[in-house]
Image (cartoon, rainbow, N blue to C red; front, side, top):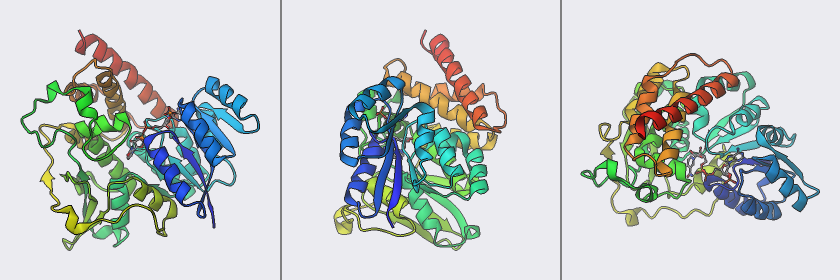
Length: 386
Ligand SMILES: NC(=O)c1ccc[n+]([C@@H]2O[C@H](COP(=O)([O-])OP(=O)(O)OC[C@H]3O[C@@H](n4cnc5c(N)ncnc54)[C@H](OP(=O)(O)O)[C@@H]3O)[C@@H](O)[C@H]2O)c1
């Protein structure tokens, strides 16, 4: 049976890979709606190629422009627009690939309507993990992760009952500065930080990869996705990005998932699960790989990972504070206004000053995000950039 897909974030790095997967698998999947932010030039091309029933964009202005070009198509906008397209009756799977937290309410809506949520967006579980899990328990919806590390863990966990899991091990590329151990992190430029050695991704996640904040977000995400204790989550540096993550069981057996570093692989799996479909990703040439290396993660040089465990210990709205402070700090770094290492200092400061309380609703999450954004900007403007 053909599955009907709603894609949130079609013009982004994940979104474009999703469309490549759909293009190759038209007998299995049909795109019924898509959403993007403001890259209407690319979105127009995508609409012409995939002819979805409905399209959502970020602003009313962009919606008006598109409506003129596609007078017979349903064009909506903003948060309500996103909710409207995930609610389209024939939708089977919603792919969450908007960066940041703009797609949060739409993700919750998809869960309430029992759609399969194919989750690329890390922030969803980081800022609202407990809330999302309550929604999932209530509706019985399923989340299939797209992030390659979480997809690997999801696949390995299927092998044995959960009580037999000792720990999960997230692999990290180490980012562009892992090998250069003597490099002073304060002097790293935006261009250097954006030059990821293996993956081609959006700008924000590429910086997170260089600071290992990306791994910190994944530690928090894994705890909520797989109901693990923080002590059961480890990180190991694996520069080749071939082993996408591992699970160790109580008998000391390890299972790992391997594949070429190409997001089309976990995207296709999230859509086809529990089946597997033949895809166009090349097979791994094992002898050609040479060596696969593993190194401990340096938590002194990259304090981000320790922050993740602190966030999990704190619970409540700590994930939302952590994610928002990092988001703002990365924006300032990308704008050339703070240094690379200052990202750590800003996030640590905001966690130190955190106003911690439980999250009962999406409104509570949005409020923490709003207040943390405001306070982080104030902190940077008044105490960091003098
Ligand atoms: N890239 C990867 O390989 C990768 C791997 C694992 C997980 N992830 C996660 O997946 C998410 C997306 O990452 P990415 O690298 O694909 O990001 P990206 O390249 O920056 O793309 C973000 C997408 O979201 C859209 N968008 C932003 N705000 C929107 C809004 N308010 N309404 C509708 N659409 C909006 C953007 O539209 P416009 O461009 O049109 O403005 C774009 O299509 C992130 O949470 C990231 O952490 C990414």
